[in-house]
Amino acid sequence: MTRKKDSNVLFTIFVHCVLIFLAFLCLFFFYILIINSTRSHSMIQKGFSFLPGKSFMVNLKHVLNDANIPVLSGIRNSLLVSTMAAVLATYFSALTAYGLYAYDFKLKKPAFVFIMLILAMPTQVSALGFVNLVDKMGGLNHMWPLFVPSIAAPAVFYFMHSYLQSSLPMELVEAARMDGCSEFRTFNQIVLPIMKPAIAVQAIFTFVSTWNNYFIPALIISDNNKKTLPILIAALRSADFLKFDMGKVYMLITIAIVPIIIVYLLLSRFIVDGVTLGGVKE
Image 1 (cartoon, rainbow, N blue to C red):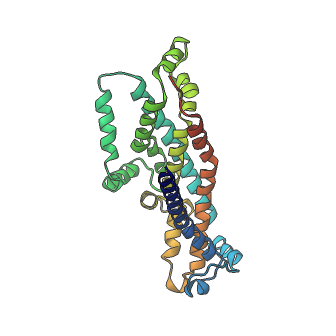
Image 2: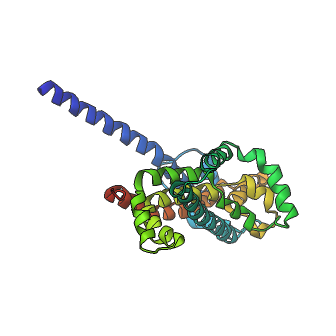
Image 3: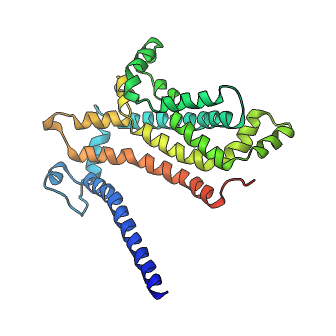
């Protein structure tokens, strides 16, 4: 009995050490990013330092005053595109998942398989056709092609559908129907609150993936004032060698990750609440 207890203690210590090491690896790169954003280009070239520099405000001023890199408009554009993509993807994917979960019709299984096949298709394969379609619709150099397609998000749909299967009893939906609730009212007032943890998780993932997306915006947007932050960061990194400033690059990347952290902090409580309270039980 004593040996078993000692082995459990050793295993617990080992698990905690592994978790601490993994946490250190995750946070270390953020620490490097923040430290380098406070250092000048010449100091960064000298090598890594654990101590912050004195050039934080200088780097921030250089980034904000760069006429070729409109940071404020880039933040506004990225916030608009990412927020709209997260809202559209989560709501309409939840609605689609609810439709396939709560209704029985002949093409139910083929519809599910079709959505899963779309999920398996890489974005790069359909990029050329998507750009041609946007061009024919007059959407080139506009913001809406960057978030409207998020209405059809197969990965988000699959997650929502799986969550409904484990958390939404059909008796609850049938009771709402017997009470005279319309289908949209049932979905908006009964189903959506139950799906808050799943919506929060997918909103975070969708926001982050859209915020970091470079490929599609680079194909659609050409106006400097409509570019998102990833495009501006790439433009800053590809600047002329004589004008290249690592301090500005690190500062711009630091600015770019702040909204992601804020969104996670705002939505993480819904995830914790969902894990704590659990789904509705039959």
